[in-house]
Length: 453
Image (cartoon, rainbow, N blue to C red; front, side, top):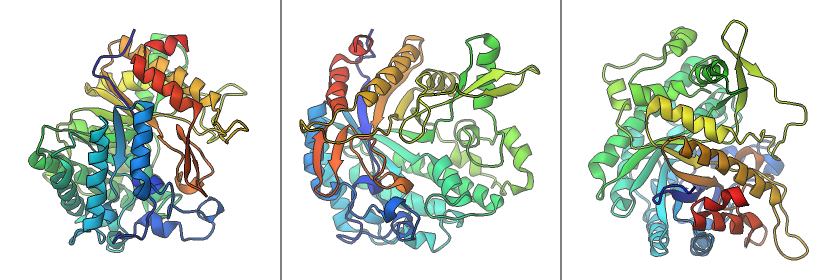
């Protein structure tokens, strides 16, 4: 069995993680540029100042993507590279970079999927309150208008935000990521609400300004619950747990998805958060709840859930010796079956896996090659589960491996290697890993050979 003939095989990156050129050609600073300047914040005091130098090496990188056989590439645009102060004057050099990158991709038959925001928020706007400012949704809509106006004659697929759970909760509540804030929970929820408004306004911009027929979505961090057994009770317990709000944080599916798809916050979240929920304007939900074309989700793992004695969902510990990636993420391939299935059943939108992959211990062997059998095995197992979901009538449109190349892994610096392409950071030499050649075979067969590898 293969996937559909129109199935999209891609790989993904984010601007701050690969571009470098942090202070070149008129680019403004982002919160990540500033966060990396704080001592003891990033592993070995590293930063994305150079990263993979993709800003200067994009032609080489696109050539490697073609060599792997990708038919799509998910990239993000750096807001402060395009509009250095977040609003106002454009940076022609920044716009030109993305213009040339899109042309380079299309010239070799690779479709660009653009994420408008993948965490590198303009520092100038952060100084004006950032996502707490009531004007922040309009700032984002202004930026979205610039990008869509410039690129939508060639770009058909748009993603507004990447993983709002992460950059709001981890960036603004725990302070572990940029901008490093530890806000009161009411402020965190205000920032989250403004992000949702910004999403809705950006979708309106995409609909109004696209010069070709376009599609739009929002990429959530998929918080997946895997049933401990396939009994109806455990399956229902996993489903209930996956679509509930159980802690005073923003780390849930429904606090973000329900306003976007149903035009309301989930009742359990409202009850749990109480007076910390911000005032909701009369038209806020109408703005947030814009029709979308696909459900984009990043899935790496999942937790085991069963029905307890009282029938309520109960978390099950992983067995001793659970397989782990070097990022200490449990290897649970079933997450790429149950996650898409549950999301499809609840929101009834075609699924795109916008991130999936693993960090591995990769180095250049004596033969000059990079052998990464664990990544090949990981991807094979996960894609078999996605294939199973597709076979069970879950409408899956595409799969984007994270990541096309080793890059700056946020707080972990260059310690974690997620790429299909090995990057020697001191020299910027690229080497296709064994997994890149393996992925090329998967793409060429449209997944038919997964059962044989």
